Image (tube, rainbow, N blue to C red; front, side):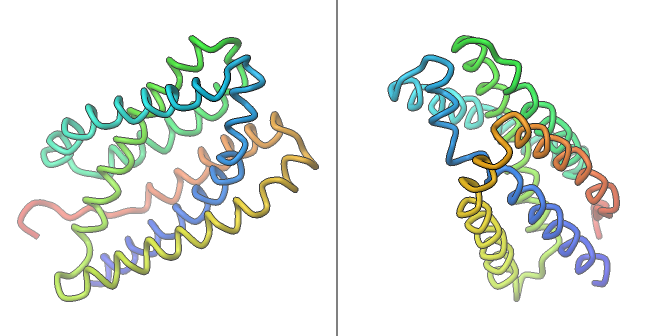
Length: 187
């Protein structure tokens, strides 16, 4: 179906932009936590509470998205991600960072559950593995390139500028998601 091919390309484009932007920050999260006064033990706890929040949320997002669709959750998550990344600049202490990581975990659950089911919904059974494989490979390559460039970018522009740029790019890339056409039940 032509619409499925367009949706696939739109999702690939959105993720290329988003993954690139967010991957610029990822490797330096440890330094960010350290700057907040947290040690390595806080890194594990921060990632753990985020994963726990995501794990609990994902089931409910899946159930609700079966009823109302995936696209509303994709758009919501994209907007929420852009807000979260900018809020990282205004976190003043570790307890605030924990709260933000819990919200980030919920957002990750919203995105991952909706993205996976949306991609599965639009791919054809005979080529689903190949389509998902290419999708994940492409996103992985984009992320890897961003991670390799991240040290240079942060060194040149600093943390604050990068967080703002990533937040703005994330927000603007939401426009891509507006063009998605979701299948209706029975299609």
